[in-house]
Length: 175
Image (cartoon, rainbow, N blue to C red; front, top):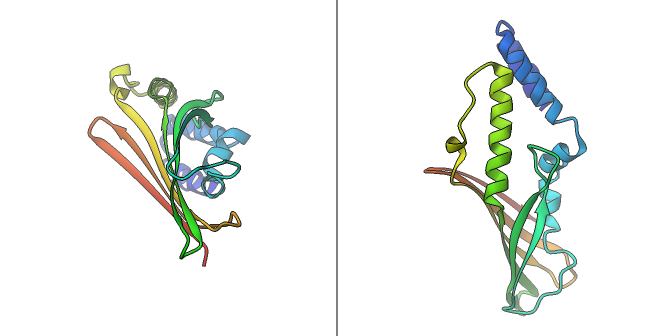
C-alpha cells in the first residue's frame, strides 16, 4: 500500500486537495485492525473451519463478527456451515460455509467512510441513498484431509451495490 500511495502522490503532486485524501489512506493502514483485515485473508481462509465439530449433512447456523476496515467496530456476520461430503476413496472431506455481513452496518460504515473521504478531498459527499442495497457475501469450500490439513480451499467474496457486482476469488491448493 505504501508503494502505491507514494506512486499516486507523485502523480497528483500538483493537486493539494488529494494530499488530505492520501493522508487518510495512509492512516487507515497504520492500525492493527486494518492491516489484519487486508493482510491475513489467506490465513483466515485456510483456518476457516478449524476447531469446529461437524456431522455429515448437518447445517450449522450462527453469528460471528468480522473486522471492519472502515472503523473500529467489527461487523456482525450471519454464518452457515455444512460438512457436505466425506470421500472415503480419496481420504478427504468437503466443508462449505456461507457468510453475510450485516447490511445496515455495512452501508453505515461505507457511507461514513465515503463521506469522510469526500470531505478530505473537498468534493461532494455521497448521499445515504448512494449506498443502499449494499451486500457482502462470502462462500468458502474446502477439501480437508482427515489429519486436519487443508488440501484445497476456494473463497468467493461477492460485494454488490445495486447492479454493480465485484467478485474476488482466492484459491489455495497444497500439492
